[in-house]
Image (tube, rainbow, N blue to C red; front, top):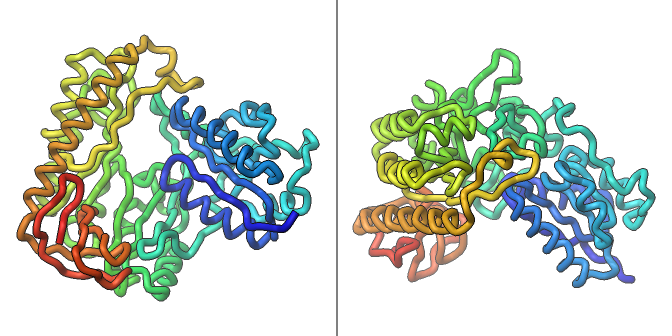
Length: 420
């Protein structure tokens, strides 16, 4: 059999995609070939089902390759994947970021002895930060992992058991990596993590995310654009709010982990904010930065959710002035407290998710319509497609310099993206 580069399949979040790029480098350095690596997601039962489906498909298409399964689903239920005849090895979230793991697999990728077939240690015992930093992910926008894990225990979420407790990358390491990325020509850097606003709690002096943001902007003056991925608004610190108000290089787009707009549901989710907290945060951030736009995660049909409770979530879209919605139909996740609560019937969940998406589409349409005639600075992702500072997609009718930030006037929109 001729050697060929490993095939990677990534399911789930942006952090998983980042870590796939790290595994690509680690496996290449180890000399691994003729392998399929599936990086799984565990956020819902449906995500696990899709992971199994993807594994079976990849095995059919690559019958002579070793199939290695990792990621959050492999971490939380390794026995599920070890029992699949298509799977050669199962490795945990900590192990997948270790060079020794990939050197061991490269030496014997088809080894099926039970003692090494499953390599998944206790993720809660991991104390160090992500061990592998990659210089760039994406061609023009770089994602930098600054945090991993989560100390909170939302009742619907299995992710802490897949990712472990919160741990932070020291600020100096982050700054040096971003300097390298800027030197390589990246015009935008996105800070990413599992629970980004918990960054720093495990470091000496317990700095906050806002301190990191301000330090990056101060010490990397040539970085044109810094973006923050999903945050928990209740944990936004004073330094972060100051950066929002005073730092034009910090992009005016925040994706919020809201999950619901009803106080009783938020309490049953074991969230740390109430409805009015979310509204106040959005009002304050928009006061500090009038061009700020918000995205948000919202779950439809959480256990015990009545129609009246759902109406509060629907209304939150307007009350917070949300633009980009990520709607999740609730799916019971084995091992979480919410899975033991009284469930909403599937038809109601699907209906509520559709109504939330429709409200989100209306809000996006309003945002797009408001941009007509305005000038935006747009980072070009290819010669015809880029994104504004608010992360809104823009389609051009003529070629633009790929990877550069261009200024252009918005001429209209097609319902999902702007045109220029």
